[in-house]
Length: 232
Image (cartoon, rainbow, N blue to C red; front, side):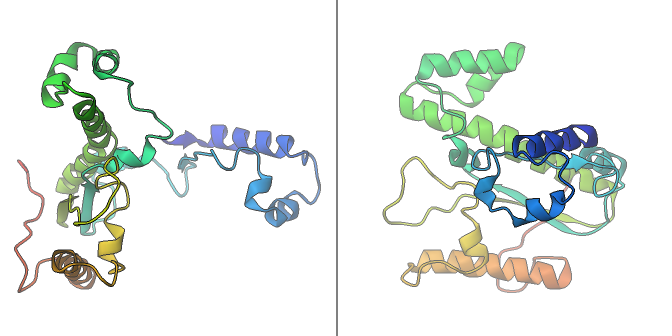
């Protein structure tokens, strides 16, 4: 969600007032001298980009729809279980019945179609069905909208869906969560990682660095990665 400039400025005024700095002639210096935990609600703060007419002169969705984004190649994708990272902030429904009612509340006339796509008869199935809905709705759908928006420019885009889970102990409720791909992208996997994990990381690093150098991740020695196309 994007905030309007008026809303963002209003939030800033309220923050300054809450800190007892309203009208202070040295406001900026005092704010910059504060530690992060001096700010009210810092731990739970959830910011958003601001449509300020400068950094964001328009909503990116609108720019993509009109082909007004920068004409550059892109790699865009998601992880299999992105939304497990947010269950502390957005609890999972308590049981299957609650899950089904939640889907009906959220999707209305489309609820039966959603429940057919994300079926759940047990608590475990319900957990992963809810994670799947949230991941697709909040990550995969926006990613695909952005990918489709690249059809309006000449540069190509490549889609990924990261789903690799290494062998060994792991949190059974975490899956391939938000940010899980980064250790493979940057080669910071454990020194004792098995061959499959090392191979996965090396392939991703090779794709990514080739893309950074040439604007195309494809290279000899790795499986072809087709660019995103209409009908994908």
